[in-house]
Length: 116
Length: 111
Image 1 (cartoon, rainbow over the protein chains, first blue to last red):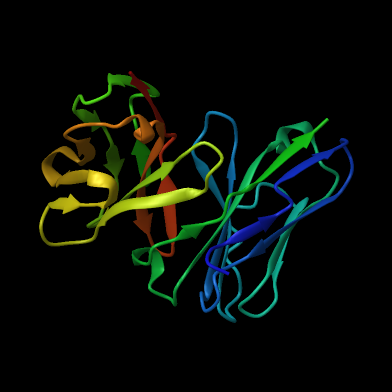
Image 2: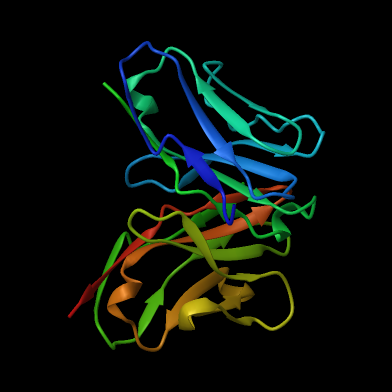
């Protein structure tokens, strides 16, 4: 695959339901990021994976949010007991190695989540 | 604390006119600075980045940005905009392993 892919592209759910969002990074990219973009807002950092290191979860807004990554491939972001304020576009990005923020992040198209 | 400010939420320019999008940052050390563009229905794409060296950075699609340490600014410029430049533009500053994004400036192009 040429770029970062995310699925689903759109998700509508009812308040209180759990949702799972998927991200497939660019092959070979060891770093993976999740961001949240609320309407009219900038990107809000959620979580960062780098290789086999413990993830940086400092941006997760509550314990309803969690994420996993299988090795250096697919990642899933799970939101439990969704609330209306979780409605946003969830963006995934990946980058090479551990160059920190010097490395260019390549973004997926995002998953648009609407909680009714 | 690190922060990025994009003072203009919306900007409208005529096609063919010059463009400048403002960005100010707050960061104690030498910043890593980025500009990303988000076109409708598209993911974010890196336009250019500054780490060190020449303070005038050239990017893709004819964009450039100038780092001015004294003003804590990293403004994005283009001498002549095209209708396809209509999009949302995000300035960002990197620290540690993270990047902080501004709230974005939406660019509208008049025919």
